[in-house]
Image (cartoon, rainbow, N blue to C red):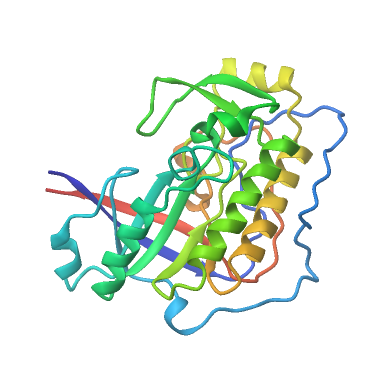
Length: 279
């Protein structure tokens, strides 16, 4: 059985001018407003210290796959990454199934391991949360769903974001107090992972233009997502997974116009993944 051993290289501090792989389009359309405030340079910082710091070797499995028991007795492993889907955790409004996350957090905590917790919306949004939401089909071009067609809510759709942020609030209430949960990657305006990526093949770019994509909408959605996570997890580190990764941008063609995201230092980190397969 193969598992993925991932080392997360954490860079604390201000995250400025890092390219986001969003479709490089623009058009003049009105911006939807949400109740979640946008992060600004004047937002007070709330640094996290002690047991909530994130560093070391974390074991990753496919989404909804439990960590093998042998992992917890390995002294070289510092923690685990729990990945699951929004549709699995909240299959209906007001109904939550925490069994998978709880079992993995409890096992890690009992073994003295830390937890990075990832819940993915986007293509894994429950059907009820897509009702009344602007969405469209896209072909996945990477990852475990490569080649399949998925339905993506528009990252800027106000109804979608409102429902997702409500879930993030409940998620934070449940897991922010747990000292084993040290890091929660921000998601929301995403597609099939926690990475800041959207489908960007020629057909997808044409579709985004027709659907009303603008750079301002996309950046605004991420600002609101960051604010929602910071509010929901006041004692837990929040991470951003840039795509393509800044230092490896030369591996992919540079977009004609890359988005930039301005954020406050707060508890936000740039998570760069280095991984290798272990037999």
